[in-house]
Length: 323
Ligand SMILES: [Zn+2]
Image 1 (tube, protein in one colour):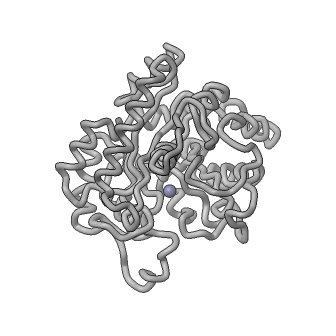
Image 2 (spheres, protein in one colour):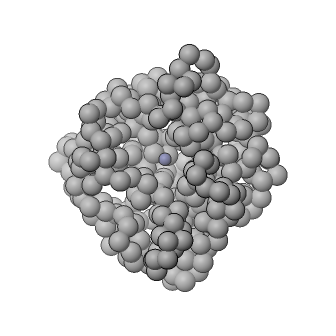
Image 3 (cartoon, protein in one colour):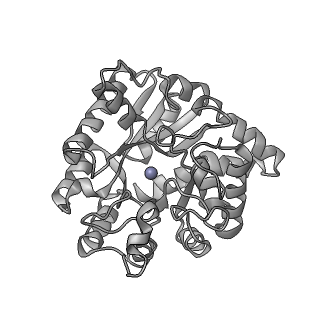
C-alpha cells in the first residue's frame, strides 16, 4: 500500500542532532523515519516540516531556512530515490519513476513575522503547506493545546495578519494547516477560505479530549469543505489518560480513523504520523512497519478502497485541487 504522510519533524531532528555534533543523515538513521525505511514501507510522499520553536530557537527565520537547506542537500545526495515536489504533476512523475516525493511545510507561521513577502519567498523555496501557529501566540493567531488556560475566556481567533495570510496562501497554493491553531482560529479559517484546508496531524476530541484534537463540528466542516485530517500517532492524542510514557497502539489509531470517517466521510481521513516529533513508543516501532496498520485496518472492516483512500488517494485528490 502506497503511503502519503502529512507530517513529520525528521528534518528539524536531524538539524538538532548535527548541532550537537552527531553525524546523522536522511538516508539511514535511528529516528522514526529515513529513506531506507520509507522504501521498505512503499512511501509515495512524505511532507517534511520545518518545526520551529519560537521561544527557544534564537533565530527562527534562520533556523527555518537552514532546515530547508538541509533537506535540499540530503535529497540531492539521494536523488535516485527521492525528490522535492512543487505541484501535483511532480508527484505523479515521481510515482511513475518509482521515486518518493518530498513536500515541504513549515510548522509555525510565526517564522514569516507577519510579512507576506517572506511567505511568498518561502513559496518560491518550495513550501507548499504551513501551520498558522505552533503552541505560541504569533503575528497571525493563537494556539491551542498546552497554553489553552491562558486564553480560555477570550475570543482568540485570527489576527488581521492571519486573515491576510490565509488569503495569500490560497492564492499562491500553500495548503493551510490548522493543526495547533485555536478553536476560534479554525472557525476563522473555515469562514474566510474557499479551498480545502487540512489538519495535518490531529485526532478526534470526542475520543481523546486533548485540545490539540478536533471537535465533531470541526471534523464535519473540514469534510464538507473537501479538506483532510491526518491521524496523529502520538499516544497522548490517541486516548485519554495516556502520556508520552505510554505506547501508541494500532487499535487506538484505527478508532480515530473510524470515528472521523463516520462523521466527516472516509474522504476526510489521512495520515499525519508526527514521526520524530513525538516522544512515545510505538507498537509498530517506526515508519518501516507502517504496513502493519494496513493489515489491522483490513481486519477491522475497512475495504481495500477505503484503505487506499486513507493512505494516499484522498491526499492525492487534495494536492491536485490545492497545489
Ligand atoms: Zn505538531
